[in-house]
Length: 400
Ligand code: 3PG
Image 1 (spheres, protein in one colour):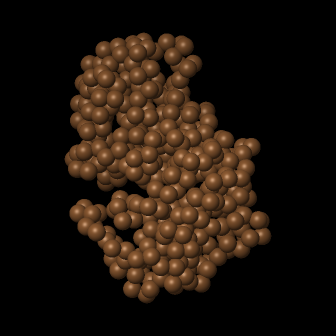
Image 2 (spheres, protein in one colour; image 1 turned 90 degrees about the vertical axis):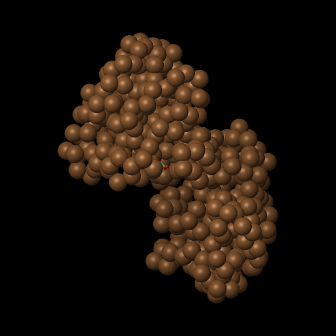
């Protein structure tokens, strides 16, 4: 983007592919981190006189307009963050988009409606994606990729559109890639990785890759129960991916052979049912040893001994990557595990990277200062796939 700005963008229609996929409660944005993260790129372009067209997906609508997934609230918030008016087009490539973008004066900004209201955006068919990318390309002169959270998706606006326009990477992508490089090249040791979240299957690639690189891997969240099962423990009615047990057993063996320490919960908070996240009614969990989860109980957070253990394991790390909450942090009775990991990172001198929408949102909703961490990534799947060593379509398209 520095080169692009040096060449001059005044009067040019610049398409910014952002990731404004923010969590919503109805039409209320519950965490605007992604909007704030991309705003500086948009502001720089607008200040340089570009006519900025911002596009993004939100959620996973089924390729047709669906008001529940409208980007209108995100457009409004972007206007507040930028401190300048932001127009909104009620479609993506239709009459509204054409007239709103054509009406932009130099330095003005418009947001298009959700890209995923069009089946071409996410299509697996190259021609269908290409046809949609052609329509998007007709709206703009230049493309800036800055939706880091979506660069792992081979979607029309991420992968096909940059091939059709002069293109550049925005500041957010540059920052995110710079940080992730620090975790893959010459990483400062000890290097600890904390992985949580619901599904172990989402993390297999990254674990596979980290086994040769990390010094210790701490496991929490729903995925911990598949690890406990792989160690031969019963997990009651906890989240379990039975089919992944042999894979995890293989990882545990490999880790031992490679001198990588896997750290698993020693105690957990359990209850007979999942808490009510709407009413947040008291859940009254009990603490049990991780190898003694009763048959009719579900593990919903790491326990106090585990919190202490994980804090110790993070205290002397020089680099930490954290993805995925330790428990159902949205309910106050199950937030302490996630809070303890966040606190350990804040207290440690390690360079800490928090990746993933859920962990980033957890850090903010639990009241931590974002600046106390080395970096809070706007990418969940994207940062994981980067660490897996995969080629990310949205980055490859910009390097070309
Ligand atoms: C994310 O939230 O990780 C990104 O916005 C990508 O969304 P997706 O997983 O629906 O493609």
